[in-house]
Image 1 (tube, rainbow, N blue to C red):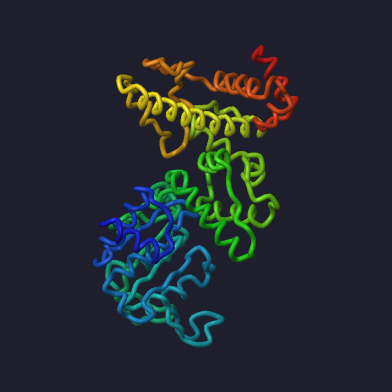
Image 2: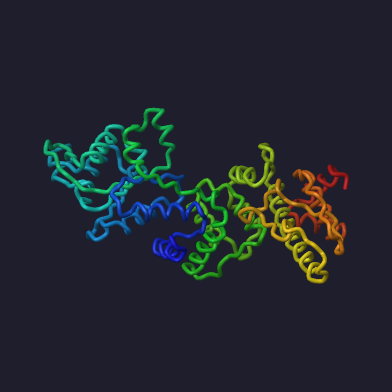
Length: 402
């Protein structure tokens, strides 16, 4: 699929991001749309699974039928009325059935039916759903008449279906019938490059809605946002963007401010994805300092690359290794275990020192030393820059013998 076609689809359905995993999911949705194959959309809660059934219907032959797309949240309907909602009922079928009623499989005949949270269906309803998928036939509650329907079913779930099958909570035959084509929507932490784009879109929307200036993240806060675990995915990110936009008076958001809106336990999990840190939890203060350190190191690497580029222009005989000039953090996130450190390089130097095995403690010590030198030994100013309390900074200076 051409890039311009992909962007057109994203704009039409309000999808933001350029992740290859996200793009692949959209391409598969468009590719299977003209068929009548059942599609199962999987992914964590809050990733935006609801967009993909709309894409499938919009690019299918069923789109020409008026009012042909229906979405049903299976987890939101009480179990006692679920079968009535899906398959309909006759008058007197149960206590409150005062008149006959068509179900979604009857109403959606000729169209597309999106069954969200299909993993929440009780086993008896799963058996009836399997029959509709295999034969196109169903029976209203309280009736003995078999009815036919021509519905394209697209289902979605955030459950681990193979595990649910092992536990006896989901029918294996239904899983294989729904899973003719599977589209996996990536979690937000799997497309870190899209996080700043999404956050910016949300804060601009809220700024326009509430007629206030949009908030802006510092570089360090952006890195913190990208390194966060985001267990609630896009839904959680939008919630955080809205809360900060409405509550914070100062429109420039630092890591210190951002940390108040991010649950600490998810910050620990996100940090483990950025670097191979210990599973032992860190105090929030040290986490803030770590994100500040990451931002400082990234700026130093950018400055070093600029200096080396200037040196190369001045001396055409100077050879600058490509790995230095082309180095970028993976996914624009600085990985602590993969930082290439160029130590004490003089302007006229033509060789680069080898990359050491950089440990977190050495990184912390080095950052504190540099901050102390920058602030002329002023511990109070150093603590402010690193996002630490003076007491914590004094303890670390003592621990490292600085």
